Length: 237
Image (cartoon, rainbow, N blue to C red):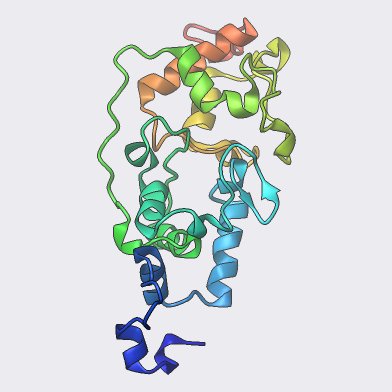
């Protein structure tokens, strides 16, 4: 039943003995509901483009590293949802959730679908503070180990929940075929730009160039290998 169909007095004055609605419920009730088309578009965006299901689940599908999305509105208030979608690191420092680059209209759609307040979206988050002395092992543990495993064997706790097995960074054979530039681009822009799984998130919205280069160097220690000779400085084409 739509709120507009209720008497105005019912919207303004609580009934005796009845608790007043929470700020979360009020904010969600004031926002117009998404159409069936918009809801389907938001779900497809999460499944096929935004890499959300690499870590989160939606109706039983997706990763196991982060809370499920279909009922997040029952656990978090609208302002928090909007802040996490638009600027996760500054909202929850230390979170392993990257800020995904996307058009403003898509970000607003996801926020509304999840029960967030689009007015609280941060369109231009404050720049991340670059790590002074990047620690490859610590960066890998925070951002990569959940899928690729602590030692790069592709056996992280999220690995079995992914439709495509994560790369084995400890594999000398596999990693020696990939250039440092290819590894950098995959971390920076996500798996889809390299024609690999779109469930691999893009970390370039949260990690700076020095951190990504440190991750690439750390992967080289896991595989105990270098990229193809043609891709190295001074290598032969």
